[in-house]
Image (cartoon, rainbow, N blue to C red; front, top):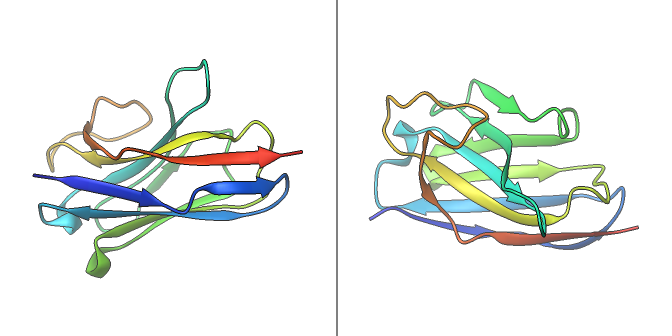
Amino acid sequence: QVQLVESGGGLVQAGGSLRLSCVASGRTFRNYAMGWFRQAPGKEREFVAAIARAGGVTSYADSVKGRFTISRENAKNTVYLQMNSLKVEDPGDYYCAAQKNYDSTWGSTDTWVGYWGKGTQVTVSS
């Protein structure tokens, strides 16, 4: 059974940085694309970033381009989200996502996601 465990959330001032981590278990990590989504209170969950299985291709929501960086360490079964220049509109629960099948087309929707973590909370103070 695939499990995703996020960590690294917390409270940070606007302009600050946080790095989220997600450790995956239950299958061969390097065979699947991974991603991050977020959900603010009262809003729908939205795509943040995704990364291909080998890490060479990434995709970002326009709202985070240039500020957030997704990366992965396949040897550690871990995907990261480095968040810099955090803004007051960035807070929410951040969820790690794993591709359901190795041949599922991944992108900015969540139709390719087969597994979700429980989330880690990010709060940004002004």
